[in-house]
Image (cartoon, rainbow, N blue to C red):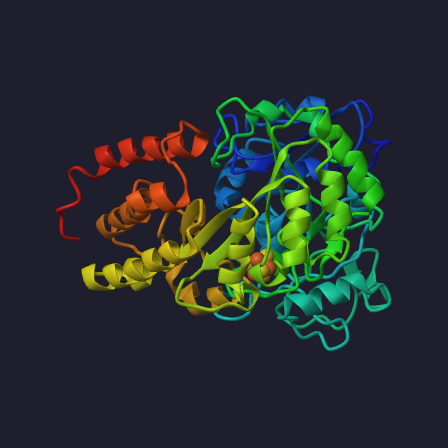
Length: 491
Ligand code: SF4
């Protein structure tokens, strides 16, 4: 068995990978695995999910998003799985899926990999995934009943006194009260350890920031864009969102740790800087944090929930280089708690010359048929005309396992759909022609908005050659090609 300690791995390569990796250079922003890779000269990050020579490698650290599960498994089958450690959202929700492909499966957030890998506790039963209701794998050590509530599971893991390391469990083995017909795994599925001091800096030194690419207004190709995390989690519990599944409470980095990280980013001379936090305006010391993040002088863009965007918060943003705020309109027919006062929040931003980025969700099942589609998109376009966002982004509904949306749609989803969790594929629709048409209409209404006289006269100029404009011209050419033979075809 491979031993994962700094001493045992000295002189061996430790390689970080993210899935999906496209098999080519990744684009986007710095991958999350950089936050977990430990210090050391033997640590590297591979932007490609290529084949490695196992004999030189001591540990592969793999972060797997739901869309990358299949790619990860195929890659793992070509490598020594006793050297693979896997974590992130998908292994957190489905640890059992990874037992044949990894030596250790880390559940939940982690920023101290050595402390995480030193644990031996047993907490999970084997193979009880049943999407009808019973996909929680943990069980209560007192009653031996499965724990279905992800929050209760996390509480159990966090509470050392209640953790099942007493007489029922010894050195990773379940020794009594075994329920007939159930099999128990030993120390291979472990909770991630999150050190509240955040002692380690993300390994951005292992990553070429030129790989980052963002489609945002006013950014020119070739300008440097980078990112920072100051907190994780969110107090809201929107029905479609998987953030509360990974982080059941809001946790933030100490200011000193954040300042050290931002100093690293400053050396990259970024023109744009994205705050990756799900909801940074929830933090009571938001002003102190944004002041630190503003020190590189980059244009900042960030998420916020509209209900936290007060006049004071908007003033703080303006003073500290915030140039765009991403607000989720989500389903335009629903009013979310976080979106109370959405119009007022956008008004505050507009008064200060800060752009608004409005993303929205299209449930593909609600736009089947011409009438339904037209009704939905008419409502959406009316909302866009009302709010006048500088940037918009349409996404198809992606029910994540563990969320309330999953409970409504699981019967329409099978594992082969996971590869389509990219928000641009309406995988709830199984008819290929209808699916292609929906993809086109998702694009088309965004194109209509950007190229309208309304956008030009009331919002901003679209044709300025920035990454937003260039990307949409590319998409237009793509859809012109793809849709020419399909638009008139009845599914
Ligand atoms: S406010 Fe945003 S991050 Fe929080 S639960 Fe809702 S969608 Fe997720």
